[in-house]
Image 1 (tube, one colour):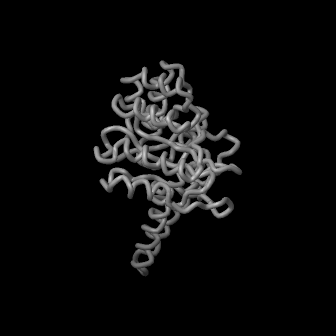
Image 2 (cartoon, rainbow, N blue to C red):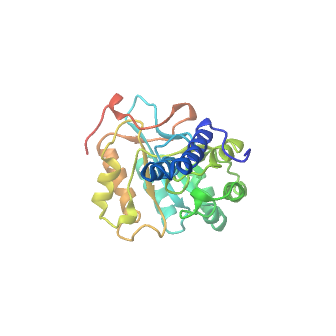
Image 3 (cartoon, rainbow, N blue to C red):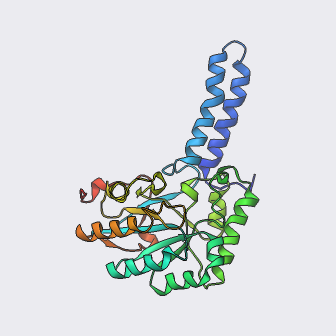
Length: 274
């Protein structure tokens, strides 16, 4: 039991799930429909907290940051990539923008020079698991979660980087993740809006999706690497940077004291339509 996250929400979800199962067995004979609801209802609640990035029951996930200026946080997942990363660095330099690269440990181990280049250019390197286990991260054992974190940290340590921020694949969580992150000094970072580049839409649609609810303190998510369709790859980042500059926004990397968990609340800031 000690291997699970220490957040009270974890144990509440587990207890509710088990209680539902026991209750379902108890009423199965006289009330089969009620039993089915009792059996499946807690599973749906647990699934929400595992798969919904906005859910806070398992891991405290930050989705925006406090700022009184027209600033956003641009985050780029899945690198480093030998084709994309150097060109992204050129784009960021041309726009005077700072970003956080949430990198995959295996990629970092293959391209340590790119990690050093990201840092040398004034950007942040953060943790995005070691192998990007999208299909099974939610049900990974505590030991496997530990390996994903430790292996990625070891790959970055070679380059002199000690990340403080982590993003799980597609925002998917795990019962053991909260405790594992705290033990390694890692903060979980979500997003306010993302491009969903894998849908193979055109660049304008991707940019509009990222900037639809643009407001100060937004966390924007885009991707690099071969998972992104060629027609969108790199071009989406260029397009978003241009639109941000046109609207008078700066891309910054916020400090830990600025981070806000839960749902984005752009209503308290000035919203900008794009």
